[in-house]
Length: 475
Image 1 (tube, rainbow, N blue to C red):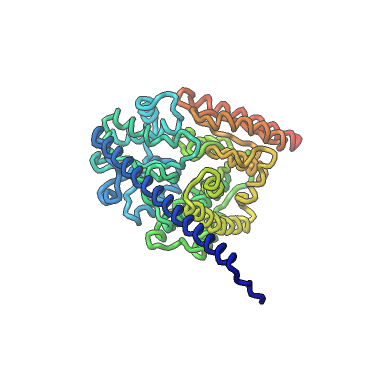
Image 2 (image 1 turned 90 degrees about the vertical axis):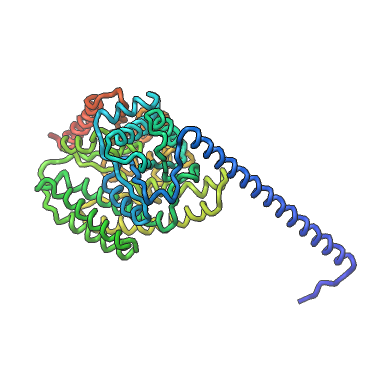
């Protein structure tokens, strides 16, 4: 190795370089301190604003120490999912109750306290919560309300402000509102979710996806009516008991449970006489999963001799995790958030693969398409940069349903959802040009539309499906 010759010029150059490095470090540290100071002042100012608002309007912020005494009401949407999630939150000290109040009064309350141009899911959830508070079942001074918030380009991102405004009008301004806030907008009053808590919640979602998937594929064909539903109830109770003992979360326990679940559904006697129309449901997250939001659409389809496929909630979660790292790089954000999202993505893709492999191993059942493959289905339909709410994911789900044999698609669209009405209909025409047999109908859900009108739209789609089946069989 040749040693560099030491000269006076070298010594001067090194000295200047060292001085420049020291200056750069001093400047860098100074900038960091200024940013930290500004951030600290902003946080203090924000907390003072919140306290002043709360003091002025009687608003109470939900804090961590309140969970021991408060009952937290959550909107009813996914019975299987929320039953398991309730157990997980309970293990962390939260007493959550899932609302199941339906009926015209819920809609009336929503219309009473929300502007009639508000998106339909926000209106329904507000009406359901105020109706529950009016019922007299709860101690109003020890009750809080919980909603979710993803922070995406959707009016639901402003839901908490709208809900608080509605509560004040209804005389419940002192009832605290908390949230599962994935965007970090409500740091002062949102439920603090640790990484272990998120992990458990997402595993419970995969269990729920599997139960919903198998139930939808068995129920239309079961010989003894109600047997599939009883199997769902059995496994919901069984997994709940495991969760209470902090079991069922490891990959080994997960695999064992899923094999037993698939086996139990495969043992239900079914009848293959009479062809069922295969129908997929896509669209807005709340409306597709909530019987209140879609006027019991799945039950209606079963009455119309249909087999229903509804994409699971895991796909939406993976959609958010997949987009997070890129959004942090493009729009700014915490590097911790980016790394955590990437880590969770890799972790839960393992669970997704395990679930798909186990379901696929039984020829009776149709497994969902893996997330990484479903992402490739949007080529030629929509850009992956279109992320408003879940736009490219919606196109991918519809394409995935068609490729799995569910060519008849109901795209549920709530009133007031601009992304649905602007983006979805454009995608539908493009999807139809690629999948020639696609039979897609958008159905609007809003207070002014009767259930009969919505059912007529579905029946027209089913009529087209029946005529196509007849042409295929030559009957």
